[in-house]
Amino acid sequence: MPESPTTDSRRRATAALALSAALGAGVLASSASCTPTPRPAAPAVVFVSIDTLRPDHLGCYGYPRPTSPAINRFREEAVLFEQAVAHAPSTLSSHASMFTSLLPPHHGGSVLDRSAITPNVTLLAEVLREARFATASFNGGGQLHPVWGLDRGFDVYESFAESEGDRLGEDTFRERLTAAKDWIQSVRDEPFFLFLHTYEVHHPYTPEPERLALMDSGYEGRLPGHISIRVLEKINAGIKELRPGDREHIVAAYDAEISSADAGFAEFLALLRELGRYDSSLIVLTSDHGEAFGERGRIGWHGDTLFDEQLRIPLLVRLPGGRLGGTTVTSQVRGVDLAPTLLSLLGLPVPEGFSGAVVDLGEEAGPDPKWALAGIDGSPNELAVRTPRWKWYQGQLFDLAADPGERRDVA
Image 1 (cartoon, rainbow, N blue to C red):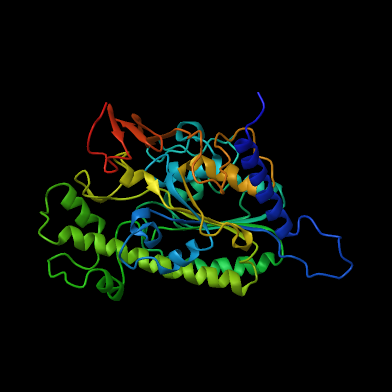
Image 2: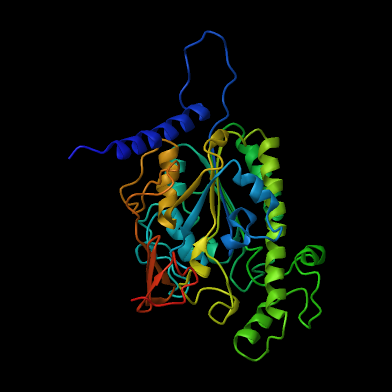
């Protein structure tokens, strides 16, 4: 059957994006003029993951608090995805799906099962290193520590914490900048892939007092400005009773942490400009999962349900030169789609083992939405299936268009 004009135009648009990325990166050179032109900067792929960041707490997704001025400005040059979803509400499983383009049962990475990513699985960093990209990651560690296998393909892989109990959440995005600057300068004009990650927004919430005051100026309750994991455990176990204003105070502390990470992100973008690598960079800003704030009972927690407050993630992609900036994609995009889409935009072949789809960044709504499957690490029977319209979970069916809070079973 011949392709429809719509399908054909989408394929031409995707090919044009890949070609223009290559042209802007200097992979192809123009010989149409005898006048010497400056050599274009080499391509750079920057993948930024702010752990535990809910999209609905960012201004560019409609949040009223001033949590994300830098991310909001970045959105003007980026494509925003309204329905990006993770495959698990936990750090290792979700990140591994992004970088292997495989579902958690297929990539094998599981903290609760004490298993690293399967050795014969291909990771995005391995593909890019094979394509002559310098590769590095500066991350928060914990579930991203090299013991879990995400370091494969990286020339440099530095983790802040060795385990989840070791300073998790104490790192900041700003702490990544010195290492990132030194490394970018060391690779000079080479193509590079840089993966930056921070647990700054992850519990415990330990914001600077001035940032917390901007989010929660009227609180007079008993909870401290720093919300420890122990305090959250007591609240969620029913040992510590929530009083009026306490929940809002906890959310404000979370929002203040977002504000701090946002400021670090602004400094990083300024660093890329200073080093002359911003314009040619393909920049991804996302997260691995969300956070619950009382929607199902627990507060300041994740990893225990597959409702959207834990599965939806922010996703903004800036193309070299800011092409398609301000565009919004309304169709559902999954974690497994990120790696093949990035490779396609770079004009590189997608490994056969990748299970995700190449996303057309220029489309507003896809005609054939892919199902998103999600599970809870260590709980093989806890599964959810999601489309842009529907969610099937725990024997219940939710109409996400009419009931985004997933309250009414319409099965």
